[in-house]
Length: 482
Image 1 (cartoon, rainbow, N blue to C red):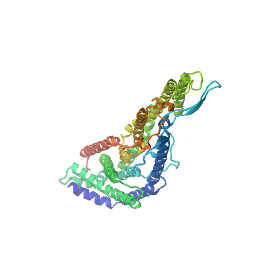
Image 2 (cartoon, rainbow, N blue to C red):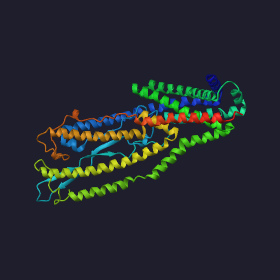
Image 3 (cartoon, one colour):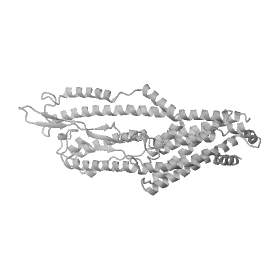
Image 4 (tube, rainbow, N blue to C red):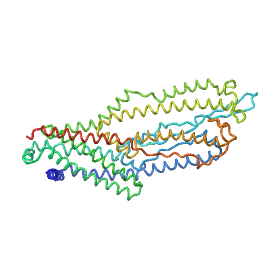
């Protein structure tokens, strides 16, 4: 009986204008998506070329520095680390245009130290490298609508409303609902039959669109997909199914609560607008005002104040301060003083940079957790998690860069201990080995994918589906069929 009702719903839906529009629009958007992200100027091939060019420059720089000496490598650091572009950006572009595509491990500053006429040295020093986070965006394009799978999914939720707003209210108004219930059929069977009818009707155009999208990508060869990518794409199809199910059950709930289809449509449209736009925007604003983050200028002023205190204590520009003597291999004590100064200066810069970014991360995480009260936001975050895009992906990238920062430092110290001629004083170039290093031995940064961020939104999507089904069923059980 359930399938009989579902077939009736499918046949009815196939004869409507809304199905024709869905059948045309979804495949059209999917093809446009494949062309934009596969062949466009900001698509994966262009991003991938930029990424590999930066990797090549970084490798050339490391080979040059390591070939000079370990000391120079230790002071100048590993350089810029670009973030690998995701091959599945076309599925969930996220806010990648606004997110820095790299972190910089660069020299923190340099200065010259010249003694007066009574001094025998002219000492030029530069501070050790620090991990810095770019605040600028590489994107110079104007704001545009991103036709990725997430956008198509949001649009699909709108079409789901159009297919369900009159599923029960319309039958009640036409008097056909009482005829259906006069047969040996339960209300749960009617509800599941209508769910299956709407689900199949919506998934067919979506499946056609996805197939056309992937065929275009494969034919153009613009985005090479491997086995793990296909598994993630399969997971995204499952997310689409959950997403559609949520709004079908929501539509059936509202349709069972009102007496006519027009009222049902109005309430569903208002709900959709709130879930898709109003609710996330208001929560983002609320979190920003609840826990405001100091501006970059304010953080810079606080950082410079502490750096000035450190410099006043050590007086690196004064012949009479703790650093009156130049660091050298012949004067270990002076070299240790410089190492102490550099260590405190770098620690201060690192602490301010890390803490400021961590506060931003916590604010974004809080806003994301709150906005996941909307099933549309859950769908977006789950898609971005599988695609390895968006803010959560950048947060994971930064955490891995920080671990690499420690790995690189440990490598320098380990290599230095093998040179008996070195003073083993880090981080001063005169206190470290002056021998060259094998560039192949320098640890490379490898970005690893993490799918932990997917678990919560997927779990919430399943919970929303169960909750909306229950409230729809209870509402239908208590509603009048006439």
